[in-house]
Image (cartoon, rainbow, N blue to C red; front, side, top):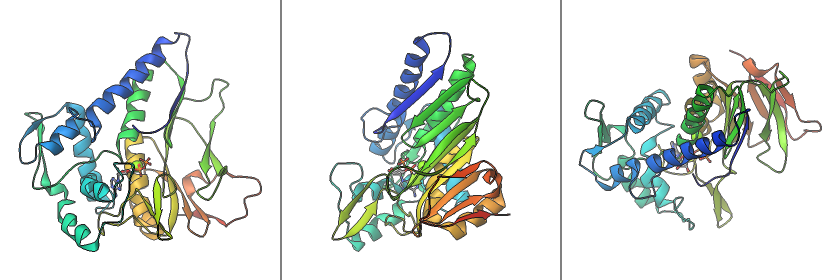
Length: 308
Ligand code: ADP
Ligand code: MG
């Protein structure tokens, strides 16, 4: 998944469960990677205008991604892959594509170019469209791992897949987990949230980016403009029951910006969030007001609670 993964599992069953969990991650990567030949997503993209056999889990995630695209009015869009490639984020060398190139790609970033058939277990992309699970796979993975661990009688685990954290159960002493929210402007955290049985998922411009002629470009793209999203936010952390929801949503809210994100939160009310703005102000939704602790000495910006 091109990221650091850390898993801490409390069990009396020995090392075995850790290896099983690792294999689960490899399986997900072998199904979802867009860059590795033979995966469902690779084959879907490579065989445009043809029906391709897909696993039930791929169909489930594709269908879910389409729903989120609709509910976020296209701020999250799994069809963003041709743009991600044009900017070079699939490789080690990035570049700024011309406005003409972006304009020619934008019509491909459209979920109606993705057809799914749940009965025959097939999918198809039309024209030059391509799918990318980069904004959803890690959230899906933490959910799968958590479910697997629960099925194996593990009550306590702390998972982190490159900024995608999941807390299974409470700590063994019965207390909550304190999960730090990284400061996008430098080392350390701006604060922490005390939670259990939650996904805590962050999207930020600081995670993968390049600079060109004094301008910074990052890997979260506004599918509506084709450019890296500049919405006034430096990072968004979503706290939710489902990791897949939190992963999609953290990306989508980062694209939307604060105002549109607050409207989305108001109309859905099924997650909490921490927003850090370009001015280094912190906004948290009221559901976590009692469990958010600002880091001692954080004075770069103000802290405000968003109420419904
Ligand atoms: P990270 O992968 O660093 O945790 P995100 O979850 O925000 O960050 O996902 C960013 C990845 O998702 C990008 O690398 C790209 O592959 C893909 N992506 C970029 N912009 C979007 C978008 N607007 N909607 C869906 N996927 C996106
Ligand atoms: Mg995401």
